[in-house]
Length: 414
Image 1: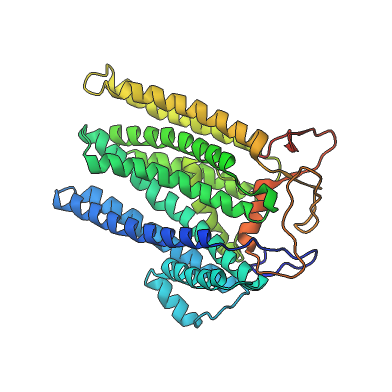
Image 2: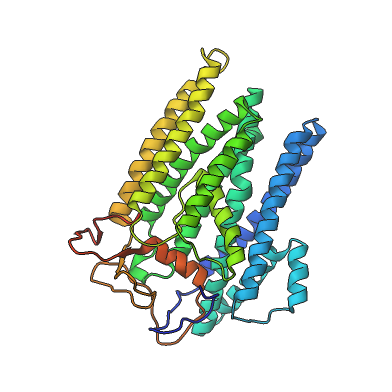
C-alpha cells in the first residue's frame, strides 16, 4: 500500500471543508488527552500512596505501553508519507517521538494548519486537504490509545470496585465517563471514514446517535464480563487475554491486511487490531463482512458468557453481591439491544458502495442511491491509510442477484 499522498490514476479525490467546528473538536481532543494523562498519573499515585502498588503499577504500565505504540505509529507514518509541510529534520522528529511527544506535536500541527485554513476566506484545496489529512491520523492514533490504555484501565478500575465491594463518587463518575469516551472514539473514527464519501453520506444526527449507542451497549457488557473474571481469577485474566489476543491476531493475519508501508511494521498494526478485537468489532478488509462479523460476535458472546458464568458459579449463592444480579440482567439486555441497533444501522443507515471484484480504489462503480467517494478537479492530499480503511468499511463486491434496500445493499456490509 502506498504511504499517503496524492492518488495515482483515476480522478483525484477532493477533501471536505475544514470548519471551525472541526478546529474546536481538535482543540478539545488535545485538551482531553492532556487531562486524561494527568488523571492517570494522579490515579496511579493515589493507588501507590494507599499501598496498592500493583494497581498503580498496572495503570502506569498501560499508560507507557499505549504511549510507546502511539509514538511508533506516528513516527512510522512520518517516514512513509510523501507530503512534507514544514517538517523538521528526521533526527528532530525521532527525538520528539523518543520523548513521547509525537502525538502532541501532531495535535499542535493540526491546530496550526486548521486555524490557518479556517481564517482564510478561500483556503486552497491543498490546504483544506492537508488539515483533514492531519485530523485523520490523529483520529486513528486516538483510537489506538483508547483500546491500548483507556479500555484496559476502565476494566481494571471496574474490577477494583468489584473487588473492594465499594465505589467512591470519583470512581463511579470516572467509570461512566470512560465508557462514554470509548464509544465516542469509535464514533470519531467512523466519522473520519465517512469524510471520503460524498456530502450526502456524511454522518447525520440519527446515524451518529445509533452508531454511538450500539457501540456503547456492546462494549459495556464486554468490559463488565472481563472485570468480573479478573475479580475472581486475577492470576488467569492475563492468560485469558493472551489466548483471545493470539486467536484474533491469527484471524487478522489470515485476512491479509496491508495497512502499513513496511511489512515488518504491519505486524504491530495487526497486534494492535487484535487488542481492539478483544473488546469490540473492527473491520480490517473490504468486502462482504456479514459472515465474519457474525462469527466474531458469536465468539465474543460465548466467551463473555463463560466469563460471567464462571463468576456466578464461584459466587453462588449471591448474598454479599446480590446487587450485581440486576446489573448482569441489564448487561444481557444491553448486548441484545446493541446487536439490534447494529443491525438497524447497517440495514438502513450505513452507506454501501459497490465495486466489481478485483477493482482498484479508483475503479469504483457507483449507482443512484449508493455511496460514492469524493472526487475533485484538482489533487488534494489523501490519507491513504484512512482511505483504505474507509474502503474496508463501505465497499462490497458486486455480485449478480443482489437486492438493494433503502438505498443500500440488502446484503449488509457489517
